[in-house]
Length: 191
Image 1 (cartoon, rainbow, N blue to C red):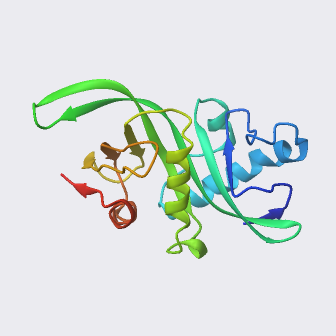
Image 2 (image 1 turned 45 degrees about the vertical axis):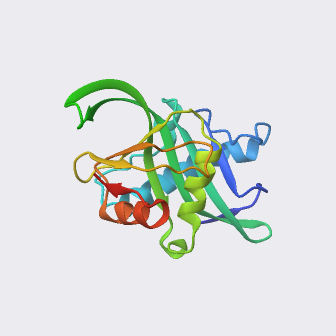
């Protein structure tokens, strides 16, 4: 998706005010941001074969979620939105298989993740996740993917080169493509 350029960075961190951090005074950006978030939410939903988007400007405004939007400058004054990653807090019941107990806790979750088809298999998805792990909106050793496909799957990994260590990565209802992506780039294996 191509848009008129008013941004210089590679990854925009967007909060519930639909403001990209570092661009708080850019009125043009704020006016267009809602539309860009809505459009990316729609293409993400189509790619995941969902009935309706799980990311929209309205949902972002009414939450404490943070949206990471990756852009690529192709020619002045245009840029391309490469993908999105939405993170937020969610109350989940986490099952500890070793002791057979369930613990209710607030977990920092991966709510939506999408890289445009033309940019897949080129390192953009890994870059976006790495960026989020280095610049999280909320610190937690638990990261959960909240996407609609299967049942809870628990992963164990120690990603030591990142500021946010993913010792226990729970992925709720992951798509097959996301499972393959997480194994390929983060060596996360199913327990």
